[in-house]
Each structure stands twice: as structure tokens, then as C-alpha cells.
Image 1 (cartoon, rainbow, N blue to C red):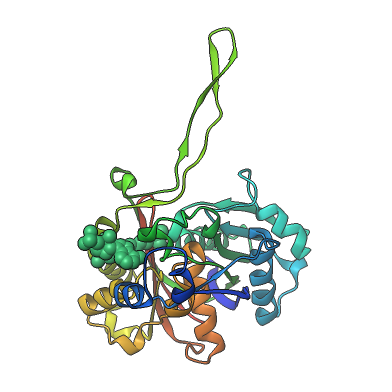
Image 2 (image 1 turned 30 degrees about the vertical axis):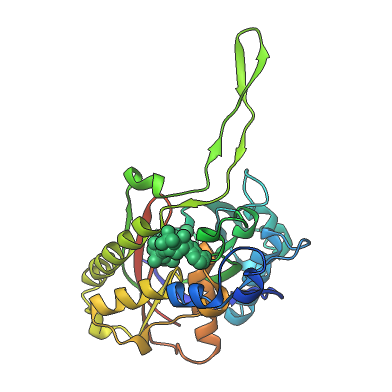
Length: 327
Ligand code: ACO
């Protein structure tokens, strides 16, 4: 059975920065409150002429360059996003923008778990021998769907895109994974469609509604994350026949520094082995893991051969972990 290796990473560079101080000109909040409760100091926001497609394409292009893989070699593009430019999907737009003419392309939605779910999904295509070269992108423009007058949510989120290139190889570097869902907690975190009945003809009506901004029960999401994330990482480690002592780096979904600290504490992982970029980026949903991964790789922190425990968690509710060896 072919194995999976991670051979390149990339991310998009967003130029618009929104600091806590500037945000507090819009809503009743402060840098002190936001940084103490979340660790976030600023976030990047997509400019009006950016699109999910342009950000995802930029991240994918950088990942392909690092991997030294041509776009025409790509067999599959998996785009994890909850904020597509088109509800029918944006992956095909990325495919054409990249010039990946041979690639099959589709979107996958699992909110902040999207990147881990897409990574594992991509690996199955490689392991079965169907595809050899896959680009996995996590990208979100949550600023489109944030209620900028709701201080309980708008301070948390930012926009971004990150990507990795996976290739078939002999020795499998996806060492273990575990994916979970619990729809009974769906109400805790939503970006929901609200239908409105509009008469069509006779007694037949159709729905012509719209999406409401993000709603969240912060306390419930916090409790869910600090209990479920350590558990799912331990299960993925068990499948890899590894323990937390073997892990060089933890790259978790960047939702809240307190969640990262609590997960590290429960697993007994020293904080210096936990990658965190949330002070600069906030919570970028599906983008947060590949963005943090790419920054740590380009900074020379994560080296070839390093073992990484990565875990995503968020709406659905969904959560999942993957143990990978970089390079
Ligand atoms: N600025 C100032 N005050 C605020 C703000 C703000 N931005 N937001 C809330 N407050 C106030 C509240 O009104 C409340 O005031 P009150 O006591 O007078 O009623 C007080 O601060 C405490 O509010 P809580 O909601 O209890 O604050 P908490 O300590 O729970 O922190 C937070 C809120 C940061 C959202 C926390 O619950 C959390 O991090 N939860 C996890 C959320 C998360 O990570 N979501 C994303 C994960 S999934 C995904 O990525 C999509």
C-alpha cells in the first residue's frame, strides 16, 4: 500500500491587519479583555478585492513551490472551507487559477476541523493508489459572516489560507488519526441558513432566506474543546503506537490560547512544543492549522523528520487529530 508524505506547505499573505485596539473603536471591548481571554492581539482581514479563491490559490501555489511540484502534476485538490465564493464549491476555481489541468477538485466542509478532515480524506486516495499528488487547502473568510456588532464573537475570528502538498511514497508519514462528530451539539456553533417561505405558484412555496452571522455558545465550545481534544489526540497517538513523549510539536486549531494551554497541560506537553500564532491571526477556522504549520516550517522550527500532533475542532460539532511526520 502506498504511504503518504507531506512535502510542501504554503500560506496566503493578507495585508489588512485589524488590531484589538482598532476593533475596540467599533465594539465595546479592549485589547486587555481580548488578549487576556483569548491570546489574540490582532487578526488579518480579506480586502474587498480578495476572494476565498485568490487566498486559497496563493497558499496552494506557495506549497507547490516548496514541494517543487508542478501544478500539472496535481491529481486532486481538496479545499476545506465554510466560506466558499460559490455554494456549489470553489475548488474548481482554484484548479483553473493554479493551472492544475489534470486535477479533480472539490470542497469539503467541516468548519474548524476541515483541514484535518481533508488531510485524512486525501490520504485515503493516496493509500488506495488512486492519486499520487494531492493539494490540501484550508481557507476561510469568516469576516464575511461575522456580526461586527457582536463583541462576544467578532473579536475571535480572522481570515486566512494555508495549504500542504501530499505525495505517495513508500514509508507512510500519516502515522495515526481519529475523526469524530456529534450533531447533538450542533446548536453550540452555527452559521445557519434561515429559510423564509415565498409563495411560488398555487399552494407551493419555496425558501428564499439567507445566512445569519456566526452564533456561538463560547462556554460550551470551550468545555467541549478542552475535554475532547486531548482525548482525540491520545486516540490518534494510540493508533500510531506513540505517546505524547514522542511528539516534537503540537499544531492545534488556533481558537483560543487558553484552550491550547489546557490541552497541553492535560497531555503533559510542554508549552514550548505547542505552536501558537493566534496573537497575530486570531481564529482563521479551516486555515488555522496549515497557516500555523507553514509559519513554523518556514521559521525553521519544524524540521524534516519531526513528529507533529495536529488537531482541529469546531462547528458540527466536529473534532479530529492526525499524527504526521513532516518531510
Ligand atoms: N470584550 C469585553 N467584554 C466581553 C467581550 C468582549 N469582546 N465578550 C464578552 N464580554 C463580557 C460578557 O458580556 C460578560 O460580561 P458580564 O459578566 O457582565 O455578563 C463577560 O465578558 C464574560 O463573558 P463570558 O462569555 O463568560 O466570557 P468567557 O470567559 O467565557 O470568554 C470566550 C469568552 C473567550 C469566547 C470563551 O468562552 C472561549 O474562548 N470559548 C471558546 C470559543 C472558541 O474557541 N470558539 C471557536 C472554536 S470553534 C471555531 O473555531 C469556529
